[in-house]
Image 1 (tube, helix red, strand yellow):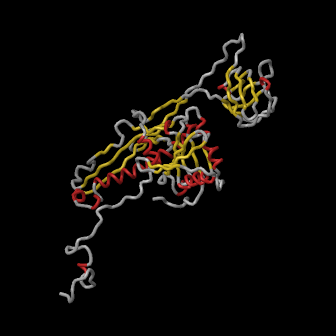
Image 2 (tube, one colour):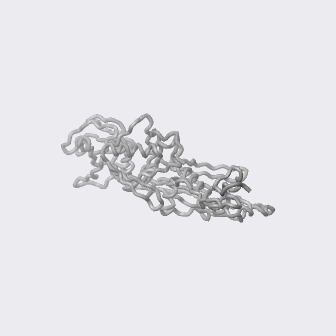
Image 3 (cartoon, rainbow, N blue to C red):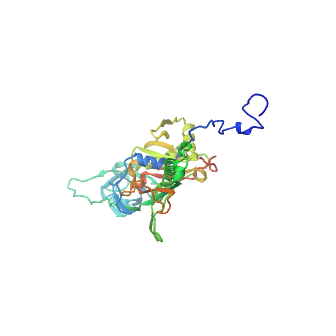
Length: 404
């Protein structure tokens, strides 16, 4: 017994102060998950139509394209040079007429000497300063556009050239997550099912998605034979993008003009789409948008049906959708990202292992334990790597911050 009326708190009768057999706890029935601003690249690949189902742990794929309608000058050439060093000279044939838009000079070549050299000998109907134009110094990086292979009245068929297909290969990877609990725990009533199969499955799938997302970016192709058998690892897109590798290290405040010049060449590729997606860390995303707003560009934002926020911006050549993938690009990677042409990248699942649940894998004598696992296998195929880009080294305030 105690004197006085009941109160909500008592120093002497502590059983009444909180949840007990006498007082019901006021518990929220929902345990709230954190922001799922993660696995954006993997979510996009799964949302798009996936590539063909793989039937072997190694798969080969090829790609081809037409010849480019230009060549690029490799090093400076004098106004009267009779040979010009260019990239991919074999895309030209003798008799091609080329136009340099920087100098307005026309050139008609008389021969292709080798894979790096075109000849502009000053013979009748050929050479520098063609058709009354003026010969001018050519600079490394000048584009020489093809304006047609000319043929004279009694001309013959020109030389021919072809584009050879390119081949590549990758391995598939197997990923696995296990879930274990006792039969008693599974039968126990828990808020949000904590420690039970439904909650464990959801959490493990979330973890697996983030890990696969990182592998799709940064994985490196590898095969070995260990105690448990053959082990395969795939090349992520970082290993496959070679032409456009952009590094912002040492540039404190990149301007929009720089970003435009970095992004636009990916749209020049013959195979390029008119829209790409930039998966970016916070520093890279902030830097791009700050540079755009500084010159009066107002990016457009929209929400995808998966709940991801996308910021759309135009560059010379096409449109870029900027998507923060903050769980993959955080800390030292917050200034990194990948510009991806979604028409030329695929997630390819492996046969029957496109996320497969294997139930009751516990040992026969573990009669009070339930154990399941989720196994998934697949790989990424990236075609026309020149239509994509890799970005690194864009520093900012988020380098040392976790986003989760």
